[in-house]
Length: 306
Image (cartoon, one colour):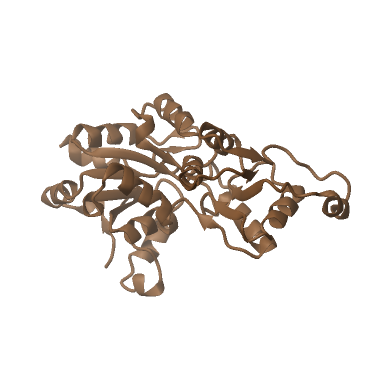
């Protein structure tokens, strides 16, 4: 079935759509903001949704910040947000290990957000920060002595990624008892210009190849993130709307969970992609087709204002 353009709906059709959900799960990057810049009209749209009785959650694959960091970012961009409305993959990693009673160290290819969320639940970690190549690659291999206390490798976005880190992560992962966690599979992040902005999925892929193992992905489109929300907030999937800018993560998660889905074109996905998606044979070609799509979240305000 082809995706429906939200702005082409009649007033009655939009009202039926709007009445069909109680909960909104919204991606952040590419829907609400681009890095540090707010996407025009999105704060007003979020406020309108909340004012009309919708429960709203910020659901992001971002692993570079803590939930508290993201709440502060929301406030700085004129979004109202509480920590209980925020779900990010750095937090999910900490919760996932905490629920297991994990008592070893995590070797971290990541960032301060991941480190702080692990520390908040008392989980030790190592590897965070710069680890540049010192000497030759052969010397790195020869001198590295694995820490026997490491029981997991967690891979997120790491601006300091290096050959040294790759060697250490791949070595730890030769032990089948060491867990392998990947924050999210996004190959790209929404770019502020025409330059390519590689994402966390690139780091996970290279570690997977070196280790000969697949990571357990915690973020969208895998079930860990939706399981957490459904379990902790008693969500009814049939009354939930997933909003995102990426068909391969946001929309796929929604489809897998039985949520309704709304794609916005203010981030990763563009109009050319939608043209391909709306072809009658899109689903048979393996494409993930949203239920609805629109240019930007602000389009919702147009209907709600009326």
